[in-house]
Structure formats: structure tokens, C-alpha cells
Image 1 (cartoon, rainbow, N blue to C red):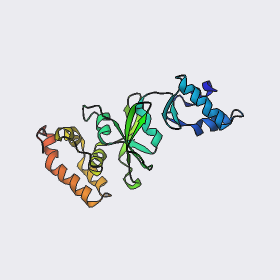
Image 2: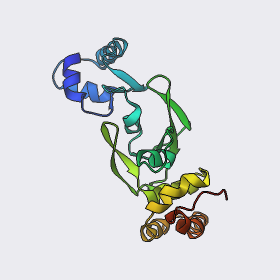
Image 3: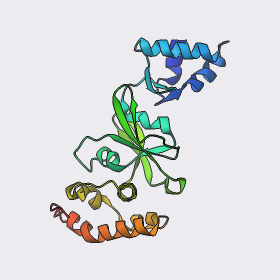
Image 4: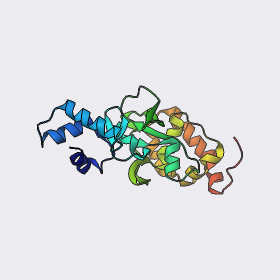
Length: 207
């Protein structure tokens, strides 16, 4: 069974116990308990990695951990990092429509990711982007900037420079139409005050 599971799920970013059970059940007489034991033994032997409770991967990279919270995209500072808009290495921030009970969770042992619940009406503005060896959904510059304000993630002014350069003001205005007045005005005022400075390479002093 382990070889069958590998052949089936080696290219999946994440799969669940139920995924494995439905696959093996279609080929063998097998109970869910047997599948659980098989997966547990594979993890102990190092042939498989436990990502979160009930979710597994044949890849031990944190890059695809967000798929455990699908539908999702990587946003906030993580989006800036993935799109090379900041130089820092930061914790992955997962924007998910699922209910979030904890803001930070451990994955693959001691690695951590940050979770943000995002209302379905704000679940847009992302596209598949290469990250490591995988393609993952990542917010575009316009949505990333909005999310930074919406989730009250404050950066040093220098860290806004590249995302401000990348922002298309027309697309940003379209995105902001669905947001509350406070978020809309805050983002637009920020753009008005700092985008031209960023475009000229002058966004270096604190505000």
C-alpha cells in the first residue's frame, strides 16, 4: 500500500486521511483504521510527512502548507517575500475562508504559519506564482497592500517601497470598492502620500 499511496499522491501538495482511504478502498478491501495505521507508520519511517493533524505530504517543504486550509492564498508580508518585494524571510501568512481558531499553528514539526480568516467577499486578487518548487496562490501587489491595512500589519516605511511601485492605481481602486469606508480611505490616503515618493526611489524616511 505505501507504494500505491506514493504513486497516487507524490505530486499532491497535501492529502488527507480521507483522500487516502477513498483511493485505497477503490482498490482493496481496507478499513479506515488500517489506512490510519499505514500512514502513521510511513510518517515514523520518514517516507511521509505529517503537515497538520489528518493531513500529509510526500514533500517536507513548508511552501505548500497553505493547501491544508484551502481555499486560501498567501498574503501579507509572505506575499511581499514570495514576489521579491521585500528582502526579509518571513513566516508564511495564510489567508483562508475557513474558520480560524488559532492565529499561529505549527506545521511539519517546529515550523510555523500565521492564519488569517478572510471573508468570502474579500477572497480575490491573487494568482498562482512560483514559490520554491511549487506554484501557489499569492495575492497581487494591490490586494497585498489592502490586506496589510485590513489586518493592521504595519511595516517600516522602507518595506512599502517596492509594493507601492508595483501597485496599479486603477486596479487598486476597483478592489477597494467592495471594502468598508475606513479601509478604503486609509489605503487611498497612503497611496496619495507615498506612491510618488516610492516611484522616485525616495521612500526612505520614517513616517
